[in-house]
Length: 279
Image 1 (cartoon, helix red, strand yellow):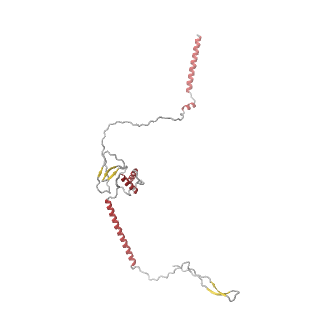
Image 2: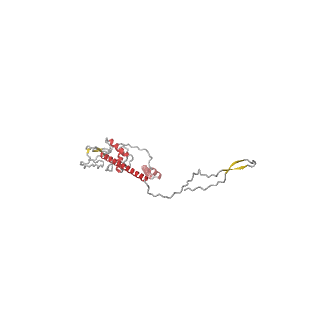
Image 3: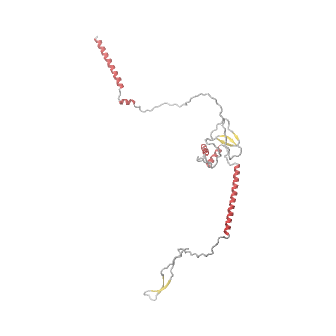
């Protein structure tokens, strides 16, 4: 009996030791030092992370119900041109369903193509050399997008812009716009008027010159003074005006040679007269 009791005591003691050891281990796991806490919460070391990448199209199908019909028609109006006084006739229109992009021919009016250009400013006037404005700048940008050289995009229609427009027409197998018959008649009339005005101006100048010459040849009505004018004395040049003393000779007998004499020039003191005053 005693042996069984002793065994039980030993087993109970062992179980108690194990339990105490487990409780101590659990308590030790809950208690951490500041260094261990910092090490546990620190970020991991940087390393290369590779992820497989797939290339595909993302699409979502949405099915809706509706009614499709043609929209309201849009009226395309061409502004009147002061350069074309004759009536304009649409000779060619685009085909139904045609897509018109930039620089495409929308229609043909009286044999002239109408191009489509991108921009916000409507073309409300005829553009020519010397014109300036936003519409000119818009035209220069369209020509530059077409690969042409309109010069500096400054909103001014100059010779480079005109050359680019002519080249743009030739690309579409069209003749660049030139002078019309009415304009040629006006130019010839203006040239004739300018010539006649020039001839009239020359005739008037000739008559004025002839009248001026006749007035110079005629007698003058200005009374002349009968008082005689005093004689004018002119001063001789400085290089020539030098007063000189008169030369004369006398006989001089040398000491030790009586009776021997020779002429000797003696200059008296120089006496100058005052210079004449210049009048």
